[in-house]
Length: 195
Ligand code: HEM
Image (tube, rainbow, N blue to C red; front, side):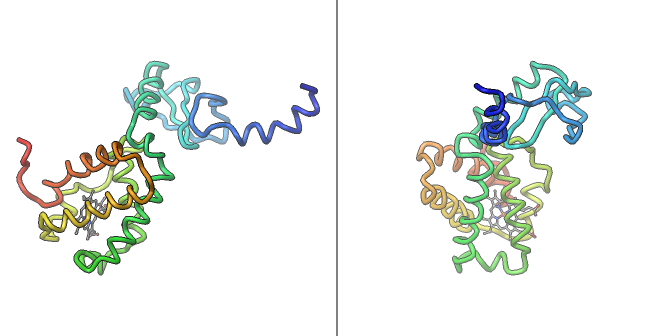
């Protein structure tokens, strides 16, 4: 290709690159990278950088980078559409929850903006997203609410119908609901039924 044309096209080529990948991952001085490898905890090397959903993650070795990359692309989080899908799902989910008189009273005094963000973080992490959940323990959060099996069923039902409405693959919905179901003992503050 003629050099002038390439120069003109380069911004278009760069902005249409996929958000996930190893292309152009060399950090620039503007990037603030993590200092410790998310896999091994060692100091990172600037030539082992992986980009996912626009964020850059540095590693101490190529093996760690590959392990992290594989975990990302094989995760349920990735398969249902990543951050964009989770954000859309949680927003629609809370709309359904707040329209439902069986459960909306629980959220009367809750800062819903914060709640949306926390739920996005939690579900994202639970489905294998890149950022681990560092928030409060599920048991502690819900223990004062005196929730019942039926409350849990209503909330889980709204999540399921949200995913159906967003046309997520039924097999993936099943897998997401299994992950959400695994929080039930904690949310209902009861002894583990899986032991
Ligand atoms: C289905 C599984 C559930 C998951 C994964 C879940 C997850 C969460 C998360 C991530 C938070 C925010 C934590 C934080 O503030 O750091 C939260 C808070 C809350 N959840 Fe759940 N939850 C579930 C079930 C329920 C149910 C069944 C109810 C009631 C019907 C409920 C009511 C609440 C309320 C009221 C809060 C706010 C508590 C507060 O700010 O004091 N949750 N939940």
